[in-house]
Length: 623
Image 1: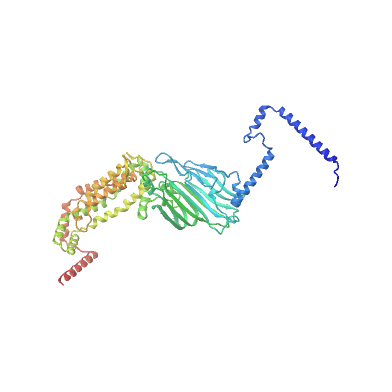
Image 2: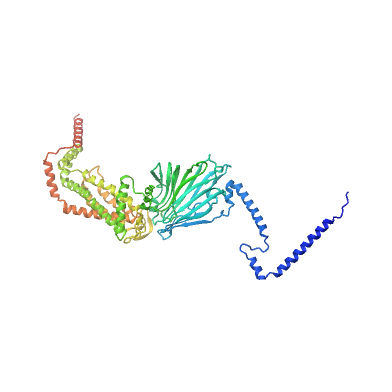
């Protein structure tokens, strides 16, 4: 065993170390005595430092780097390359806000999507600001698979925000990063005074991160907030609309649950009656799957949401990257605003199909806009427009009433034919047609003018519920022409009627009843013939249906029908007592009966067929 030797160098080293320690203790003690107590307190109270025994800054940095490295490693273990974004300082629940004079948006770091969209110039029926997005009622998510086999959702990942200015335009770039220069970006550009903002989705350097062989799906969902007084009325006009195949459009939302699929989707609109959220794309989505779910289980119970909409849209990679230029619209369902974008967005406003929509677009909308611009109230504008419409249609009303007057004059002779041939229906029909032909009258001539008015009536029926200008505009006792008026609240709910009494539908029902008394009263006896509808029953049923059906409808629509029927009654009274002379009509019919009447081919053919049928019937009787 080797004997230990005394090491002089070690002794010297220990002595030097001991001396250094003694000198450090001495100098530290002297420094502490020299420091002013107030200064010491100030040093301790540095923001963020509450521990007076913290290690030196270099040690803190080392510890922080160690913690960051550990967090990054854990994040990468969960999220793969996207773990980088979870380790950044932006991986918080913070939001970034941009706004102009009509719209305010808040965008979350988590998910990079809009968490709040408020229309600054509008209030709900109970004076609350109109929010299209708030408190998690909407989500926007891209679902994809990474090359290392992970399936991720952007709504669960953290984006890094960056806000810049370009002139008066506010720009927010939200980047989901895998490194400093590799990311998925949502870019929002908000312009002054615009409800429409530019929106783009693009990626950079992710061609080796995203698995291009698996589906990449964009999922957008929204639960529509209730904004109007009548739940049922608002829900009736809350629907999902989408455009496909370069201009065609379709919708869903009338049932409890609906689902549809189509190809080449260019925009999707979640319409909440008078307010709409729309996603538009310059590059059509290859296909789209849409669902609508009714969330109103009981209209008697107050509710927060009306319907839930969902759209699933596949995204395609170009050169391994995403690159979509799109737009968001958060604003009113106003025909003029939507039409001015020239993107076929006017189809979001339900103006009716075919000729009905044409009448609204090119006649009623511009005419009502003119009237409401020069008249002191929207209610007066409705009345004036109704007067003009009825005057324009007065020639049709005249034709209809003239036909009724002719039938009234001929009724005694028709009754004689009915009595004479009561046992021979075929012969009775032949003689009746001969009488109509000689007299120059026809029961159908009264129906045709009425049919001509249907496109106008239906167009107006579509126009008033869609007229955004009427929203929260009062007239007389109605405080909102876009919703029902109330003169009394009921302590109970009547099925199909509601828990309130509206006056405008009552007035409209009375006017309809008087009008039907005037139009059907003349032919009431004829209507009681076998096989004919009971006109008396219809005369009473129609006003009752009007009363129940319109009690929850827009008071502007009931005001129109009340005014329209009132004016029609006045026009018919003028026609009856001033323009039409029944004695002259009777004399003219008698003259027509004496003249040889040339039958048209159709009438002659019908008469020949009836005569042949009569002959066959007589032969069968003889046999």
